[in-house]
Amino acid sequence: MFFDLICPDCGCITEVVQSADELDEVVGCQNPDCQAPMTRRRNRLWSGNNIAMHGNCTGGGGSCQWAGYYDPVLGTEINGKEHRRDLMKAKNLEEYYTDPDVDKHTDELKYIRSHSHLGDAEANAEADKCVKAAANVQRKKNIDAVFDRAPVD
Image (cartoon, rainbow, N blue to C red; front, side, top):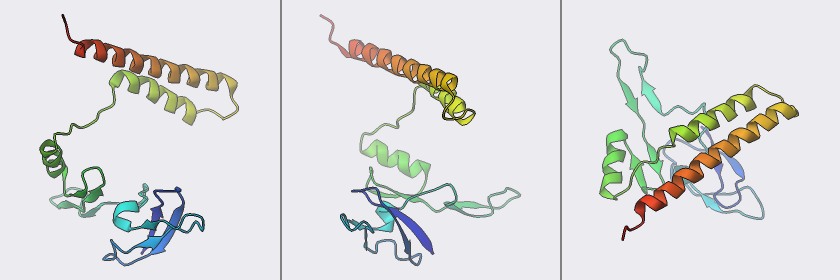
């Protein structure tokens, strides 16, 4: 099977041919200046056409089994949402969620970028406004959070 690996040092993408059980085989980066060691478990480049499900996932009484993935932050193989939640709780970590007020501006930015040409000055100006608005919302929330945590005399 063909797999793409992304180098953690230089970002170079290396295509390798490996069998399914060669998850930890060390491969060198193709960049002659780098040649960093990589494994499929830690350095696989995931794209939209890689599916981590197998079985009948279309309903009708079939079962859909999740193949799992390696989480480099937690340092282990994750076997499902509950497993990940339990590991995070044991390590006293919290899930990061984007702020809905910021998402509103970034969603608008994505819409503008996907529906306009790169050279469209008016669209670029509107996109810049979205970026600045999202940054201002985030900045205000960060400042409020600092004041909320400040000790009261």
